[in-house]
Length: 483
Image (cartoon, rainbow, N blue to C red; front, side):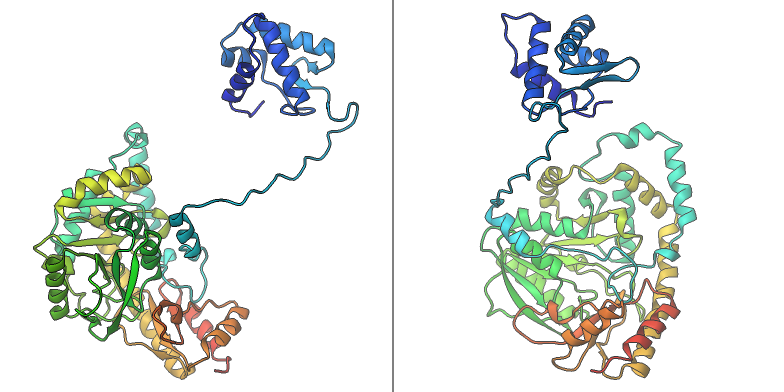
């Protein structure tokens, strides 16, 4: 069966049309020319007479007559029950078709924004389980049976409704579940009408950077900080100002250039694990109000705090509508779900929903519906409780193993998260990373997250997805390295 789109046949026919000729003559001329020009190759199967007649809107008798004429002329061979095929290679009559010439590679000309995106290197997440790849939850401990039941339940219902285009803002039932969860567990001040459902926190960052920042606008970034955020802001043309982080989080500095946007991970700073103090939270909100700046609060893993409770969201302290809050289910459920969210000040909802519709329309209706059910039926809360216990024990196990086997790897104090930062002897990171890679162990760089020229050697060791025996085995392997 021919796989060429029907529109191609329509275009071929139209390009050879001669109004003074009959339809049969026009079709014969089109096919002869296409064979001579190499658009139709030796042994290529043509559409059936019925299919081509339907595509072209002409009589099947006309197509049959054209095929028969071309068979007589030697352009086609026809086999009853099998179809009609091109019978000649015009480039080398009587010989197999010559090898096609290599296509001419024309260098791509990108916009300035496109080139910045390429130069950033993009955002690539690990696609397989490996010690100590950072940022992945334990998918082996996910409640697959429950998720399958909810999925099947939805598929037994109105599947046509789930197959239609969705609301760019997100399904109402999911937005309601997200708002309820954030109000009661994170202290976020929101209503379902302020929630925008997205495919990832990275999409939220890119969308907000594109819609809120002009070329040359200043963005305050935590130092060290999340490179995915930096990539989004730089690609939008922003100028990054890297602000140091200490034990109380980012340090406000009024002497720095006034920002259009301040990026913060206040509940569990990435990658140091520091918690932004209340005094600084209030200072940032007051500063943003004074200067008309936006605060982007990335609450990427506050669900996994193992000592005490996570600090309430900074957004809940904001009465001026300057804070945008983003979160994701990639860490709490599973990465390929592709469901995340942003809580927007009321004045940003309509513009951001419109801008989002240009990006990709909406998140999969089915993924949204099952996630909403998972939350509304209490499975999400139960899953988080179990994962906190599981990850807490692995966090403690990794700390204990590092202290016993890797005295040269000094953990950075942290009360939660899916990964643990460790400091290495000065000048040793690159060499130790190469040696670890040779043993099949990933050791993501901590030093790469420092952008302001400070030289720091360290690793970010992801532990949440690893079984206890996998953690022990990987640490034992690293213990053979010589710092």
